[in-house]
Figure 1 (cartoon, one colour):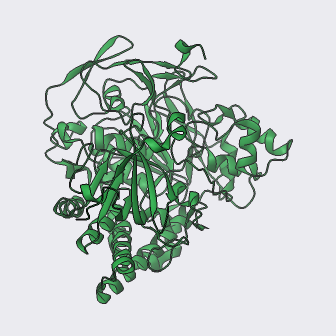
Figure 2 (figure 1 turned 180 degrees about the vertical axis):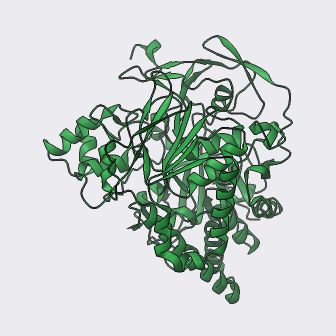
Figure 3 (figure 1 turned 45 degrees about the vertical axis):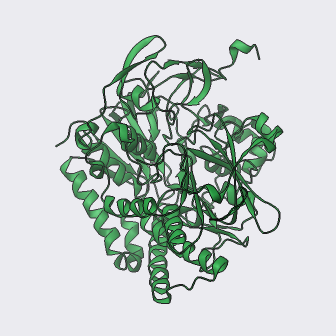
Length: 493
Length: 104
């Protein structure tokens, strides 16, 4: 152990999902001093989100097909020297003196507390995952309308359901998993509504054949949905949610090729909740704040540009998992290990196992090809903007309607989300545009053929922080590598 | 076939406790977030928006959207989907920015 209180870590890993866990344990097992930070009080990220120990779940694996893989990673973490700072929200990463990075975090699961903490490290691995893309429609702000992944998250961690009769809608493979776990947990799921046609997968037959496990997962979900009598509607969308103080029904309409609702096809389905989402968006604010280059993904989001060793365009900053393009937990685990090995080689010259690295790269490339095929099949088409009426709130936080966003584009000349924000406040609220940016960018671009146009926003702070903190950053606690072994805030189970 | 999430994962939590929502008592389980406890009690909204005064509750479920902001034991703007429920917590519907008492 180093003897100075300010001794830096070799590697700071931000995010304790599959990518971050794999990166942290790999690097630690190769002899690096590692600090792992996550906003949640538990490791696992979104995919392996699970009930807090106090809920006493004897079979958490009932909500996860691949629980043993997570249990193995967690066991390796517990056996390692990795310092765990759980319940720590990272709000920015800065380049410190010399070759060091400084990770700035706030303690407290909701970041409200609480205590600023700084971690210094020679390398950073960004494994911050993804959040859900939303496309607004009339009624989407009603209580009972929840994000599809949100319903899944609340079920996995809190054993809670938003209603008894839940329609699942949007686009992307996540919907199948959400519908099947809601049904398994006792909810009635009258319909699963997918805007794309599943037949689009067939055009990517090669990626499917190379990924039999993924096809099998789809079949497992499909069989579960049949068993629970969940009615699939493809090439359809929820184009309105109805109710006054909570959702009571939704209108499901057929879509044309461009996702425009086909007139006269709307059918009302009664429900007391709607779980909706249109795929995932890489969470890359910390990286863009550091100037890391991004690329446009096939479904119109932005992901980090990474080299074959998972390093970003900024030397010393690595990334793994959804930050490099959404691809699921298995890809994240592979990339996390690759990154951990690459960092160990860079910092310590630890010889990597060439056969293992070749194998990991092969698996990564195969899974990336599958993810790209999925992204193409589920990419939003520009006609979705026809779901909106003028009074639909596009920005939930600032309550900015579609009419005002369209006026900003048509009459005031805004062409991108940032200009719309300056004119209307859309995207200026608490969520920092995460819920509305995709929609606002589409409306600003006038619904052209682009689908969702580019707008990788650069925001210096990844999460809201108290002003007082920015005023006195010197007051932060320094978490040094010499304190390894002290794991804070709910060291996991 | 499981009929509730708790049955599905064979949950054996510690003793349930009470929290209040606008003065009304509901039951929460140890380890649940405030939002999860509210959903289990059938409560979906615990905030009214600053502009239109419209009801809101948990939406993204993972701390990203800030729609679930609640006033917890007098402190506004807590994310109910992240904050664990504690015995005796008093949740009050947050009106607007939640700082009306400050006159700002």
